[in-house]
Length: 551
Ligand SMILES: C[S@@+](CC[C@H](N)C(=O)[O-])C[C@H]1O[C@@H](n2cnc3c(N)ncnc32)[C@H](O)[C@@H]1O
Image 1 (tube, rainbow, N blue to C red):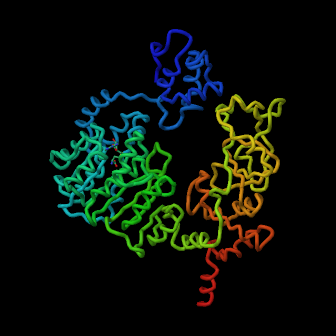
Image 2 (cartoon, helix red, strand yellow):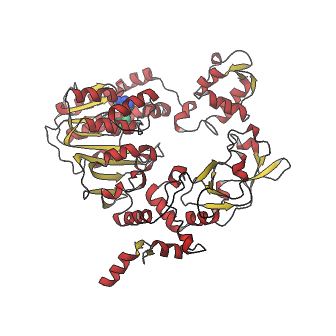
Image 3 (cartoon, rainbow, N blue to C red):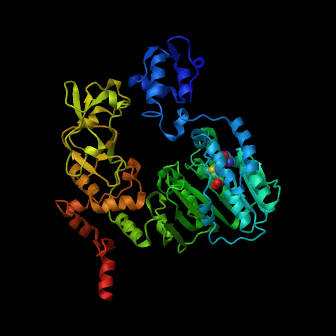
């Protein structure tokens, strides 16, 4: 994006308020960039124009502002121009391709802001697998986009006049209407430009209910805090008030008894604490299928997973089909209820979940309220404040990759011994604790190290200091580093981010150290009454015994 010179003050300075608009960030972020030396402050409320220009050219889009929602530097969006091109497109493009061609006209920032990612047809088709369809069924896509679910529903036999679609993007509404017209020669009055979250209560009030609601809602679209609270109350979804949860709860409200609902949603929905309330709401219904589609959208890192539900009260013995990577198994619905935060870890089999539940059934404590937590230092500008050679005035500092279970690698970074300019530094007592546990923040294998030398760490690692527990920091480190706890962490959270909230949910079997002085994996498994079978899979000792007895 070009920044026209008229955007700037003609003087050497630029107001902070103006800079926030130009960079599309908050005042706090601009102040952080001043603190960390990217921008030069002239006086209260004014920064140097030269430093801002330099930042926008050299740093923005590379070191900073490089997340999806902040790629404004790379793309701009002119909706009027898009609309003109779209009209042309509709006349000249095959019905099935209009949506993807329209997506190409949209900037990344606009797509992210509005949550515009249309579902690939192969996923749409798969989500409809084994769904009975009668021509008289009423079908809804509450945020229809270019109409991929709608077109498939009609192809599968729903009458075009029974199909409804809503979207806040008038271009998307135009595309869906045109596609229905082109393919089925029907001019639908039911494809409407509106906010579904406002529309749903009105539909309910008029008793307009649907047999099938299938969609891919806008994931994590930003909405006002007040609106979030209003909708969360309206649709009764507690603390889960991101757009995915709101769309799901609103859709359940207008789904007929025994109607079916299919949602393609972000991976976080299945295992992150924020979605616990909506998961607890959903588990009361009969869940038919969970499907992992992997990275379904080229430009998104997040994985996409689907949930297919029948609007019927679930019973304990209901089985859910769980599919990933062409593999499929079934899980009892009850096996998710006992999971911490009702996590939907559907990759795990019933057998594996038995081990998970067993690990939680053995007496344990947790780190919730039993530890102090701190983040590694965020300098805000590592290039400026860290060097790779020892030098006077600099202190050794460790990154996540320097931590191993058995010790710390030789430090390859040294940090300026003046913390006042850094973006975020936890209270120094945390670093100076007599004993502290440091751990990698991004990793696919848990990796903890018990530090007794008061080392400093950067924000690719974090600190936990146990308190009020009857085992030492080293003993806790050994338990957390164990193979079985690593296995458990992967099977429940399936994430490469080691979040405090997840660590707080792990069972800490402190009783082990009442029985054994030293930690060994072998003794720990004995203590847990678990064995590894010949395939390297965990089994309860009792069931192994039973198997041997039978054979
Ligand atoms: C991820 S896209 C999916 C579109 C379509 N359902 C599909 O699967 O291909 C989400 C759509 O939600 C629309 N949207 C965002 N907020 C909305 C709202 N409050 N009400 C209705 N539609 C909305 C966006 O414009 C976008 O077209």
